[in-house]
Structures are given as C-alpha cells and as structure tokens.
Image (cartoon, rainbow, N blue to C red; front, side):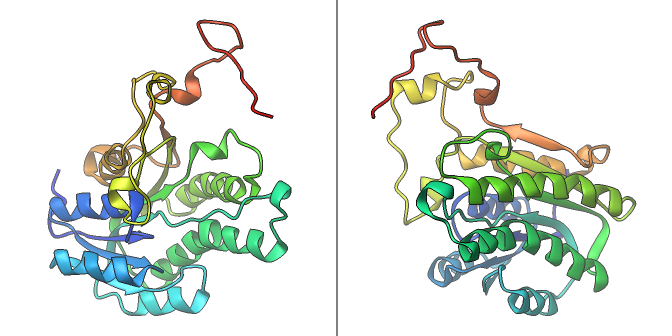
Length: 256
C-alpha cells in the first residue's frame, strides 16, 4: 500500500508503543506529528527523522490540544490516539482528580482532538482513525479502575465515532495485551520473561510493539477500507486461553 506523502498524528509517540507506531509510519514514507509530555525523548526522536515533527504538550490539557491543531500544516490522513496513563484505583485510594485526569487523557482527548480536526476541515478524505485500547477493557487485575475505565471508554467511543464519521473517516481500535515496550522506552528496561510468561500465550511469546504497529498500519491502509467501528485484539491469544486450576498443567498459587 502507498503510505508515502501521507500525514499521521500519533499522540504519546515519544516512547513505547506510540514511538514504534510513529517509526513504522516514518519507514513507509509518512510524515508524522507526535505530541507528548516527554520533551527530552520527543526532541531526541525528532532529531533522528526529518519527516517527524514533535510537539511538547499534555493532551489532557484543552489549550494544549487546541494549540497543537493550530500548528498543523496540512490535513491529517491517519490519527492514532495512543496516549494514556493509569493511576491505579480503589485499593490505593485513586482520587477524584487522578481518576478524572486519566479519563481526560484516555477518552476526552481523543474525542476532542478528532472534533478539532473535523471543525478545522483537517481530516483528509478517506482518513483513518485508530484508537489504542487494551485487553484491560475486557478483563482486569485488582486496583486498576482508572486505566481500565479509560480503555473501556475508548472502545465504546470508537464505534460511536465510526458511525458519526461515516463517509468522512473510518474509526477502529486496537487492544494490545502483554506488550514489552522496553526497547522503545529509555525509562523502562526490556523485560526478562520466563518460559511460563511466554507459554501462557498460545503463540508462544510475549508481545512486541511491532505487533501492534503492524495492525495499526494495516487499518490505516486502503486494504482495510471495509473495516470500521471494530476493535482488534492483539494479545497472542492470551485472552482466549481458558485456564482452570488443575487442568492441563495450570495451577493457582497465591502469595498472600
């Protein structure tokens, strides 16, 4: 597919999965704009690629998003709403302010950024929007309410936006599972995974950022023009594996 001369936005693209997605676009000839709170990593990233523009800003701040959109030079072909954070939940006393901020970054910002592009006539014809959700939208560990709620919200927002933008843009989401983003994140070392870590994935390994980026690239291409309003899970089959204590070698061990 021809991604050359197109223009993509990747929020939270200075590190991790977002950085990998931005790099994949750059490697196929797409101009990329990244907005991220990490100025140091963003400026370092920009220095490596002539087709990358970095904007320092917090997408949880309305004014920052508005300034970012005003600075855009051309209509957007691909919008990847990747940025999100987590501030735990009920068991650690996640406050009103912290919970609300996570929703602002993970759900409100993707909505408002899309709204600004639409109002400014900055969505290119046949644009593609990909929201990065998570398998946490469908299953949980304890004390994860803030992040889980945001990821559930972005999945629902995806199909709502797909209907509203019919004829203007396709909108889909990708839900990664266990992805080791350490190779794209200087603050996080690549994981040291045990044989058991890999074995609980039916594909036989923990995920890589490239696994997610490849699906994003596909969804943005013309070959996916009949796909909209969908969520695609990228978790190596982990969410489909039924685990019962005592069956097929699986067992529950509690440390408390």
